Length: 105
Image (cartoon, rainbow, N blue to C red):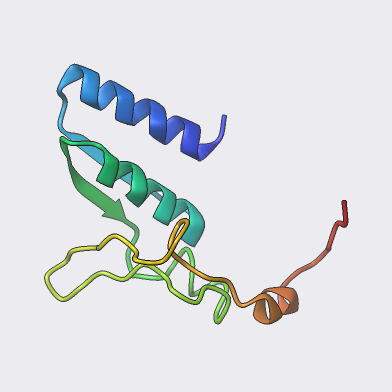
């Protein structure tokens, strides 16, 4: 089961049961932003947990790869990305530098 499927299941349960929702992830930038999108889609989700220090799961291990990582503002909030899709870009030149193996399908 993918992280997105699990998060969607949590969103459905949270909405159906009228439980205040908390969405969290300890994963890379794509998973963090996917989780944020789930949180934003659930009416009663009111808390997003993010690993600290900021960047320890996305920008620190892969410097320069994620062009628009999720940031926590000075008040402690994260905001919905304004770009299409999940809202971030990837520098493929930098990603190739850290790639161990490429599989062409």
